Amino acid sequence: MSETPDRKTGNMPAADAEATKRPMFDRVALIGLGLIGSSLAHVMRRERLAGHIAGATRSEATLKRAEELGLCDSYHLDAAEAVRDADLVFLNVPVGAMGKVAEHIAPALKPGAILTDVGSVKGAVIRDVAPHVPQGVHFIPGHPIAGTEQSGPDAGFPELFENRWCILVPLENTDERALARLTRFWQATGSNVETMTAEHHDLVLGITSHLPHLIAYNIVLTAADLEEVTESEVIKYSAGGFRDFTRLAASDPVMWRDVFLNNREAVLELLGRFMEDLHVLQRAIRWGDGEKLYELFKRSRRIRREIIEAGQDTPAPGFGRR
Ligand code: NAP
Image (cartoon, rainbow, N blue to C red; front, side, top):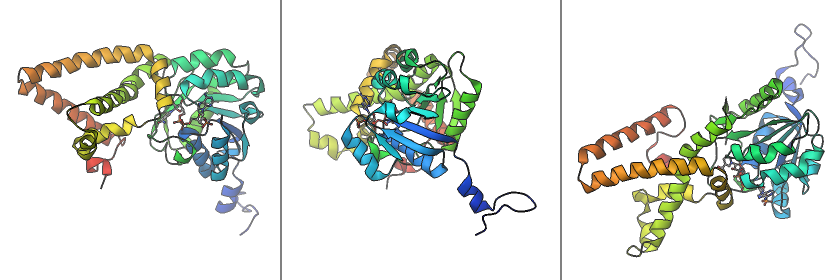
């Protein structure tokens, strides 16, 4: 294979050009290597987005596992060490831990670096992180709308962000060039990128993610506490619908505790609306109003079709289960 550029065009032969392509960022620090952190590490390797990936976790056990999996180029128990000289820093820890981590790494952040996060709530993360961000560091909060019910460094995979949306939340005075660089990064992971305010994000995610998880946790607990139905029956007959809630209700308890503690207002407002609508259904059942039930169910079926048309779920029956 030739290593010299083509004399006429000056271009490298395709394979060599690929090999010498400069990574998008020289050094990227991943603080937290759970589902999201490890998925970022995988996709950065596949797309050559970082010259060096520095990973940091809180516990030795997670760090050791990340090393066994070969997720990063260097491994740190001190997050401040990982962010030193990094051009891009990701905070991939539970929402309630963001402020403390930001405070700890702040003195080590490089001027000109981009600091971002992947937290599921944005208002509270901005409240907790922004006061620690040094002058000259570009803080751009973010949230990839992609996930599974798994957690930890083994859970990650490079396709997690493909064809999903990543929401970026530019702040007042956000540097346009830094925003464009972070947008390109997410696009290179396969994501579509949209920007919005923190308030709007927290309301939209409140209805599309937080409330569904709350309902799922609740229905699983209600079923578990039903005295007339044994637990083994709940499991045995779960294909009737119950099991679809259990996927959401199996999500990480720390992550979700933090989401509800930190998106309190939006979730309480949506929960109020939800309960009003539930009463409408309750009333229709009590009064035998079949027409009402039929109309309401027809409307919700259409929303499922629209999700499939938007490429956000599989059209296969039973969510593609065999
Ligand atoms: P995860 O798999 O549970 O991993 C969490 C990581 O954070 C681990 O590396 C853990 O380190 C570290 N960590 C936990 N508590 C910490 C603390 N108090 N201080 C410092 N580090 C701590 O979580 P994840 O699913 O990747 O979620 C990470 C973030 O992404 C969360 O903010 C979540 O809201 C957001 N998010 C999640 C999803 C999803 O579906 N899971 C989707 C989008 C965004 P140790 O293992 O060493 O304790």
